[in-house]
Image 1 (spheres, helix red, strand yellow):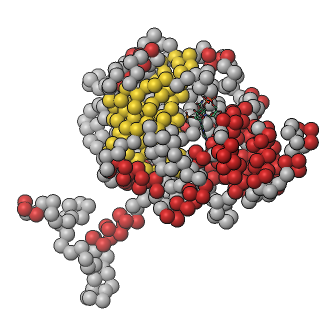
Image 2 (cartoon, protein in one colour; image 1 turned 60 degrees about the horizontal axis):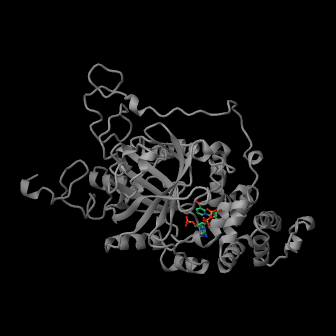
Image 3 (cartoon, rainbow, N blue to C red; image 1 turned 45 degrees about the vertical axis):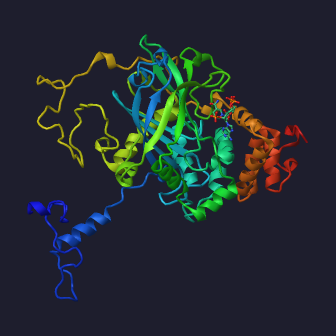
Length: 498
Ligand code: NDP
């Protein structure tokens, strides 16, 4: 192409300059179209493949780049992770918010947990914190994940969302009560993404230079203040602006009103885990603040919008397995399930080389021996060896980075019942109910009522019995909200407040 036309003339994907992008190649002005219209077929073929499969969960999302700044001078007590090594140190981040159950075109203000997936591009590899805006989850064994998610999706016959599926599953899975209580509270319909907290929910670990391990839970507290919609406001917003949260986040950042979160951590010394009265690895439970207060770590600010939604947000991939040296996992079964499941989902959705996509690529140097695979769009290691050990100076392991060994007290492999192990489904959701103001309790039972009223009585009965065990006022409130009497639902000998 003539030098003066470079960058100005449209080309095909292979670089051939295009002379006419308005008219197909046809036999005469009335057609038909001929097969040799490479431009038409290239455009149509590419268009037909424009969508990658949407995420099975967290399909609708919004994201922004930001900065994490350390404020705590003492993090070395807990971890050797370099991103915390001095006050004022900054690490670039990327944070993707999302709803969970809805499809890519669904409304932002649905009652749903919100994803809070955060990537720290640290100098020793990416650290991905794949959290939610809730500190707990509906289930505690990953074997139940697909069952649970099916209840949040569409009915196989009607293709409609189904309160029956949801309440049927929840009523038969009482470990869900804690998360159900949060979901139907005011926090189930946050006013956009800037006004909600994020939580790691899972228990992770930190390891210091002496090799001491601390279990930890991460908290990201909004500096904008918690703000929620009522059920009516959230429902109304679906018809006013389906993309409310996307617009709110994008516009705030665009005008320089950068949202911020306080980054905090709860720390549990390794030895406490064996004797703590709550299973610290149970994703349906929190660690009460009075037992493990939050420690300030730093501040997270979002300050740059993506330039291209598909390239940066749709192709973003977060892996809970990505932790930096000085960090580790925990026996939390749900976390263990996600360590395998997330990268597997990315390989299916955007391909085996998803880590090479610019939004996912580490910003530090990296040298792996993984090669080839579909869409290998970098130099693929060039002529350097693709095996290790090799005698040509290729990168090698370093003992400094061996994971700390973990000991487990049991040596029996089996399918242990999580129900037999812990059937206290009620204390923590009850505590949450009791800390709500009377008007927040009123909204909670009203929100539950508007959904539970649509299902069969036998499912209502089972679920209201669970609420009653959390707190009699909770059960009574829900019964009243659906126009029923608690005496007709809870057995006489179990009624404490009749
Ligand atoms: P605290 O009184 O110390 O903590 C209560 C916490 O409840 C607050 O700090 C706030 O969390 C959170 N909260 C308030 N309203 C709601 C709501 N509608 N939905 C969800 N969370 C809300 O008591 P505990 O630490 O003993 O916890 C009591 C209950 O609070 C727990 O059973 C749990 O349900 C809930 N909670 C506890 C958290 C924890 O890590 N301990 C975290 C979040 C909730 P925040 O400060 O994070 O905004």
